[in-house]
Image (cartoon, rainbow, N blue to C red; front, top):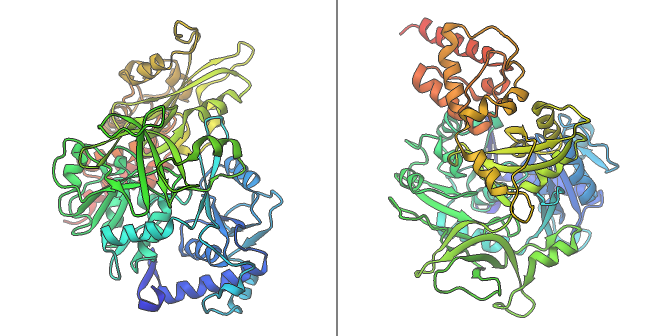
Amino acid sequence: MVARSGDAPAVIFGDSVVDYAELNERANRLARRLISAGVGPDSLVAIAVPRSTRLIVAVLAVLKAGGAYLPLDPTYPAERLSHMVVDARPVLLLRTESVSSPALGVREVVLDEASFEADCAHEPSGDLAQDERLAPLTPAHLMYVIYTSGSTGVPKGVAVTHTGVDDLVTTQARLYGVGPGDRVLQWASFSFDAWFWDFTLALLQGAALVMAEQHELMPGESLRETMLRHEVNHAVLPPVALGITDSEGLLVDGTITSTGDVCTRALAEEWSKGRGLYNAYGPTEVTVGASIGGPIEGLQDEVTVGTPWDGGAVYVLDDSLQDLHDGREGELFLAGSGVARGYLNRPGLTASRFVADPFGPPGSRMYRSGDSGRRGPDGQFYFTGRVDHQVKVRGFRIELGEIEARLEAHPAVEIAVAVVGGEDVSTEHIVAYVKTSARHEVCATELREHTRRALPEHMVPSTVETLGLFPTLLNGKLDRKALAERARRSTADAAAGPAVAAGSPSAGSGTEPARTDDEPVFAMVRETLKAAEAHPDDNFFDLGGHSVLAAKLASRIRKELGVIVPMRAIFEARTLRELARIVAEAKGADEARPS
């Protein structure tokens, strides 16, 4: 792409634009510094860099040097990032001055340090030759390691090689026709493989990769404004983001790809108008994905995840690994070029999930996904759910066991069970039920903070409720279905109970009631959270709010009060009283503005 159109924009971040030639030269210089630091094929390099052009340069440089990258999203809890570094044992850590050092005995390079930038500037900027690397680089070498939620409470690193990239890129080229002049949104967190999809869809096809600050990508009005401002015409978003973002005028004559969760009929009908809609499927254990369907047009009885992409295969098998050709539901097994090497430093788990492929050539493997699905008579595949204890919440694949293990690590918790509550995909949230020790006193807020210190925000329970007695089955085992049903029931009654009282700093504390002119905001908060009470000194997120519900609240405020409240304001407001004041000030400013 550099040779074809070196002066075309490659990365757009805010007001800065870097063309392909400059991006390539910066990556080449850094790659040579990495090689001199000992980075070569199968060397793992941790990268802790915020969203920026520098992040793209760092990833390209690691790959050019022959190494593999370990993404460390700086917004993740320090404890979780430390676990990844200790478990993966990278040879080097790349970070910027704005990111704190984990101080775990790993050699570090601070990319924006003046002396290091000067060293890079003295390196040749031309493309690297194979003999410059410490050893020849082949497709079988490691490309990245991405950590996913673990059922035992310990995140596991998925080791992906370069082998599947060729088929990934040819699939993208065949379906999307992306090229110079196009703009691809970079939406996913660096810690997810969907980030690599955006990266390749833009930079290996000649388009511009549009990056933005996290608050500018929050679903709803912020995301919409960002895409309009940068004239984005290709994007990949989960259904939960599509559900609260107005599609009108977005991605006109471009494409939108839904992934990470079930794309509903209603979403398919709305987002297929004026743009090509695709629905993709695939866990982290393959190179980004396994199958894709589209373009999907109009109202569908059921939205397909399509057919395997180039070089891949999807099987629907029963418990005896017999292929179900008749449309019956079974477990999805994934095969082909994109199958990962396995789990880093976990040979036992790798052997149980990456198994011999009886349908492929000798020595080939397939991944046992734990997902259920079926194949239609036309060869299209349909995702129907999970067959194990793993769930998807707002597009994130989560092992509930990891949440439970973290809660049970608290000295006051004897038993913890995590389930999914909510009425639909936009209101889904984690609910944790705990039995605490009589020797310790603990509140829901403390337990949520305990999980937040180790788990990413999407895994922190929105509600923690203490139970004296857990429902059980006839065999004495915990009745998880009964707890899940309890969480799914109307939350209005539960919101006024012990869980909210424990987690709310003001419930029952006799604080002053909301002012009359604040009441519309409080009413919207209560309705958005489906909470019976919301006090002026409560915090939106302590009451069970999360990013999706924050986006829904901002949308309601805009539509019903005619006030645009930035997503950042909702995140930064310490109390609902402060949020109401922000809304009032914004409304006052609008009314004072000359018509």
